[in-house]
Image (cartoon, rainbow, N blue to C red):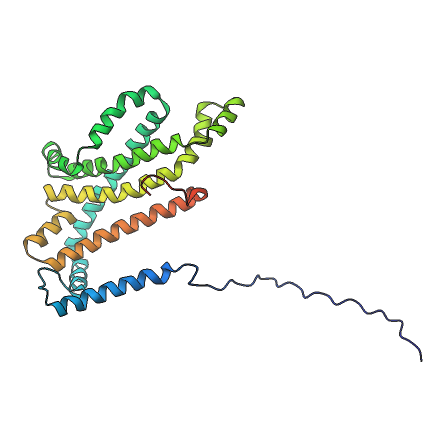
Length: 283
């Protein structure tokens, strides 16, 4: 019987798929995605039914449903949006001024020893003064208009930014600086290639704190003397014993801070992604 001369070819491995298999989403990898809304729902339900069961008066602690109703009414009022825009404008202008001054002064202090020795005692002394106590003075000096609130927001957001800028520029790798110096790099080149990148995580930490403090400073300035703004609206609801309205304004202020925080974090992920987990001052 004749045998076949055909040679069997080895089995070929299956061709790889053109598209990689999608990784299944697992909530266990990011438990905060379900923990955060769960905690919120539990707290709101406990608040809603706890107030009713305990018989707490509305002027002491309103129901969450009353707060939502008041918030909805305010969002439909053009005057509310006028107050919102005023506070937003005060906070942003103060934040830009405070951050800009902190960046310039912090750079000089961290790079020039004589500037540090001369100015740091005054900065530390001024930092110990409660910033809220300065609000009446700013109203006297700059009036009841926009300027006093912008100055208050700038002052209260200045110091967190200043401290982080100084520490960030000082945290640069000494070996890298020495290597660049040996190769003849100028101070400006060393600052751009080593000091500034190492300071970026610190700077973003200062921005994160500073924007929240700027909102706080604007509202505090409106408490002392103003005719518009969310701080003024808080006082008005307080005088009218509209506690649900007060909570509604507080919710809006909280959302403003959250949005600002997430914007800063998004910028940090884009501009300082290599040091996202770095522990920095005020983070």
